[in-house]
Image (cartoon, rainbow, N blue to C red):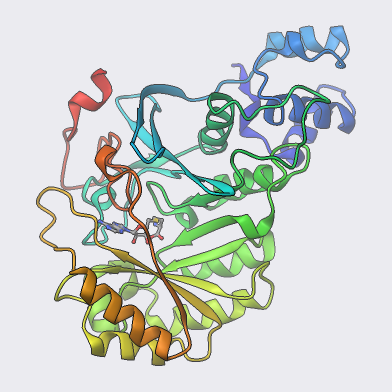
Length: 369
Ligand code: SAH
């Protein structure tokens, strides 16, 4: 079987090269060709010995994702639907902003967590993405956006994609090993060389994995909070029954002991008349009292049959003001790309649920195009 070299971080690739009898610096060379320069053909790796190139062509491949749809919104947000086989597809979103570009990456086909207000959660779960499929999203976007550099040409500090957020489909920390290998590639100077502070893992609150991440690969951490009490959070984020708020808050404090940024970002989706009352904001400020943090409020992005509503802008501002009065930096997330269903919680891709409620695909048209 041919080995897809996109599946390896530097340690994995070095080990794989070692069993071919090749030195570690060869692994670094090939890693750069693949990720910095976006090359998928061993023949183009001009500083790699011809005999090794031939050996690699025989035994290995650099196989990126297969795009089946490419949509662009008026605000420049761009979304790719990527075929991951067997009728499944995941989504990746690029969000350009002044001075930075953020890529929102998926980590699973579907999601098993069943958060009540999330369209990915409604679709059920199929499987984890491999390391190649996760890093392949960045690899692909870099190539399409013209961000790959010719060796020795251009300023490597000018990055089209300066930030990566693992906020697409799936729960990153439920796919721990593959996600950590992909994170290492994002940070590796021989690959994407992104700053730890500009790579964000977003989690619904998998406490043991938050502790592991702090040791294995600390990056910026965002936690999807969504409720100030266990009673409400049990309803909205069922994972809370396993890791309730007190444990989650303790894990956030521990994470900060070894984090590249000195605060946690709490994401909070605002659902009209569910979690958007003044008293919810006040309870939140108490809950996070001893955690350096910022809040990012996300007005609910609707999808068909969700059963939830978006609050008025007035309500959103009022909620924000209460948190700000408690000295918590609070931003409201701008909705980007909603006309192409690229906004938070709208990513649906194509998931053949292998776990439960649905056995047939929801969007057959998505993959037909
Ligand atoms: N599983 C991870 C990664 C998903 S990130 C996590 O839960 O953090 C996607 C973010 O968008 C999360 O904060 C999620 O709660 C939020 N979200 C999900 N559905 C949404 C919706 N319909 N409207 C607005 N935000 C939503």
